[in-house]
Image (cartoon, rainbow, N blue to C red; front, side):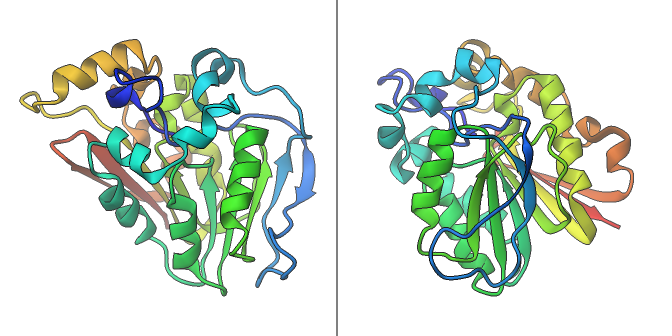
Length: 270
């Protein structure tokens, strides 16, 4: 999920937006969030049994933002997300969601603070299927509550760096990669690409190194250096390079926004 960095001065209340992934488990079928049956059979994915330990890096760096029951309800608001993203939350979310058409079967890589999951569920509509996989039980439960009005959406606990995923038409990875060590970034990117059926695509939205004259560059450099220990590795490596050989069967596009601070990368499977 996202860096909260910019608001950290006010209190540790402005942090990441996406909750992470990580965990081994057995195959479980994702059930719907409400009594109504989903329009399509949901994705099967490995899921962690409740109470399993999150990855070490998540506990060490982001426990207060994603795992602390006292902080999560405060941080999980669109206004907080928008502050973290310097007023760009709506534009970035809309740009990602617009890449998916109604009726598609989509995997969302990790929970996202704010209303991103609801936006994506509405975009897919009743004929579609949204599955969210996250490593943290508290994030899984909270996202289930958000998506309760959308019976075509379901949420499971699982490790996106290791889980064998069923084929989907689309995958959305929104501000997740910068919160993981470089080797985990690589495994997650390659695993998400492996889930895409022919003709499908993966959308990555995340931080990017801003233009040298960007007025926020000094602030964000400090944020990345001191509050986001894994972000620099993402800024120094293209997402296409993280894909390695797994990206060879895809057509890649890349665009930046807000003076280069954010990037959207789309990989379309040929």
